[in-house]
Image (cartoon, rainbow over all chains, first blue to last red; front, side):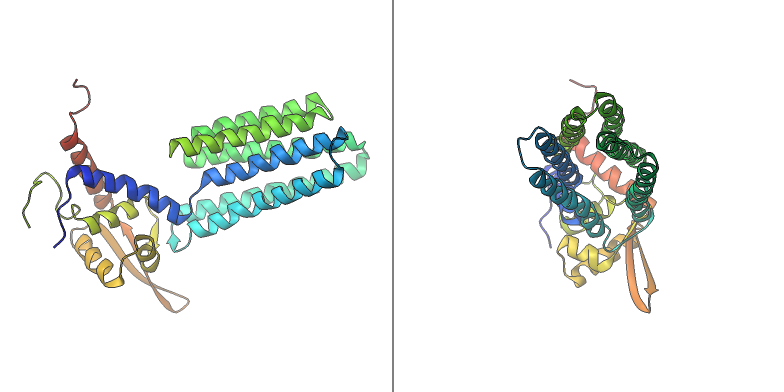
Length: 199
Length: 105
């Protein structure tokens, strides 16, 4: 026969188990925000420095590509892990939300590529179009996530991303890369920090 | 076993079953976990988990459904609505045992 738990022990066990289960299931939103925040901050920050001639452009490109790839793969791995052995509406919602990111960015890359082929803009305008449309989609996806999971912090970040996307175009090249790095990346790092504190 | 805490639901107030209830309560309503995944998350033996699940099922707190997926039998476990309510009531009574109710100094 087990020893009987006191109410205090019981409550402590509940709190401890909740945190333990989240960790075991692989529900780690702070890791995803952190990976994206870092990719934006160092990736676009590096790009700005390359334009200023401070670091070689090749290095900035590699950093952006590498961190971007990690940030892209991480949510997929974590999502698959969290939904293992699970059925029900959450899994469906998660799959719809995850694929919505892919669809949105796939459609955007077709739109941007086609527009640029027809308009033949300067590389400055071209980079403004790519970066601001990507940031705008990111903002919209955060707004959608906020509605799905009733998460006010995601809503605030989404609204901030939309403002940053608009701001980056108004600032123009090369300042737009600083907006992407600090407003975009910074916003995501703030969200990651908030998730860690709230836990 | 002596009943030192008559206010607390005896079905839930046992370490192993409490852990099962916490695990299932972290799922959103309508979501289910496979038996092996629950076993892995809780680090319990299959026999031990079955025993406790049966007690929870008898109390109407847990629903166990067996289906086939690609000809393999799969067992899903989920909280019932009354199980979710019972778990909430249990944590409420823990809190009220531990501290004065809200609004009192």
